Amino acid sequence: MATITLLGGTGFVGTALTTRLAARGERVRVLTRDPANGRHLAVLPGVELVRANVHDPAVLSRELAGTDVAINLVGILNETGFSGAGFQHAHAELTRKLVAAAADRGVGKLLQMSALGADENGPSHYQRSKGRAERHVREAPADLDWTLLRPSVIFGSGDSLLNRFAGLLRLSGGVLPLARAGARFQPVWVGDVVRAFEVALDSGATSRQSYDLGGPDVVTLRRLVEYTGEVIGVRARVIPLPDAISRIQAFVMDFVPGRPFSTDNYRSLSVDNVCREDGCARLGIQPASLGAIVPGYLGGDSSAARHSRFRRAARRT
Ligand SMILES: NC(=O)c1ccc[n+]([C@@H]2O[C@H](COP(=O)([O-])OP(=O)(O)OC[C@H]3O[C@@H](n4cnc5c(N)ncnc54)[C@H](OP(=O)(O)O)[C@@H]3O)[C@@H](O)[C@H]2O)c1
Image (cartoon, rainbow, N blue to C red; front, side):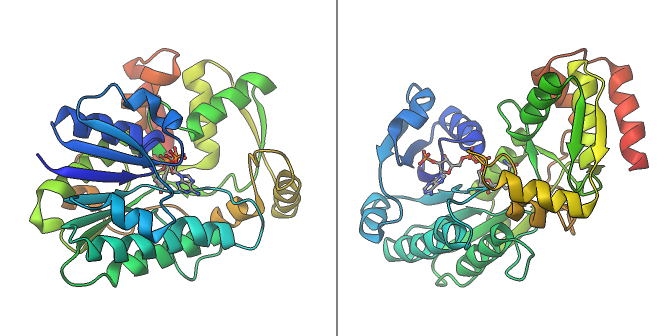
């Protein structure tokens, strides 16, 4: 049994991963800004929710005492301002502090959740800050082992992307104006992402390695919306927005409470989110398709016919 400390463990991926780690009998400490965010995890055996300001190096150092493996899942899609400082703080700065505290405390291994497209020279603050975070991990002292995981968009029960599309399609009667409708993704199931973490935990072969994680379907954003419509039984009529209009839409959304879309998101979408290498294969994972999983949690019929219809269409995009 290892002692595993998770940052960002209360969210979508964190919930799936913590549940799996608890089932394996690990001792899991979930650091959170507010334990109420993780109350659904508190019932799991061996899981402890710890209120902690993970941005404070002294707190981090204290909370990492006795930890065998640290896992960083902290991530944001939008910041409060527009300068990039929020992304820098939540992704790059936090990772720099975590690497230092983990090395100082003799933590054996750091598993860092990055993202496909993370790139210090990328077009968005999100991608640049994730890229800087990767650099901090790669520059870790030699006695801190690490693994980087870089998933494309993640789907599964409780995801934000497909559930949001489903909500919007139901609200709008199926009509959806879409920015960057041609952007390509390689969605990966949260269960396969959790499996990747497990392999990284268990196998020495993942030491100081980075893995792109994508599923078997490469689809455009438009196709993803249409597919969501098929699953929930709403005929989606996607209106691809020209770039100039998309930019205006993003600018307007920048000021909508909760920022459902932003200029930074728009910039992230300017590069395809498709794997450059087959990280799943290197980890021995055969990833699940959208068709095998999505009907099970978004509703609608899950017939084999629907699945194969989707796979045929996905191959055309
Ligand atoms: N979901 C995807 O499609 C996807 C795709 C690629 C990469 N990723 C990466 O995977 C990781 C997990 O994603 P997710 O979808 O599970 O995200 P999520 O559901 O939004 O959860 C994010 C977690 O980060 C913590 N957090 C957020 N802002 C924070 C801040 N300013 N300071 C400290 N903690 C903060 C939250 O913890 P508390 O509120 O409990 O403190 C929360 O548990 C992220 O790094 C994300 O970038 C996700």
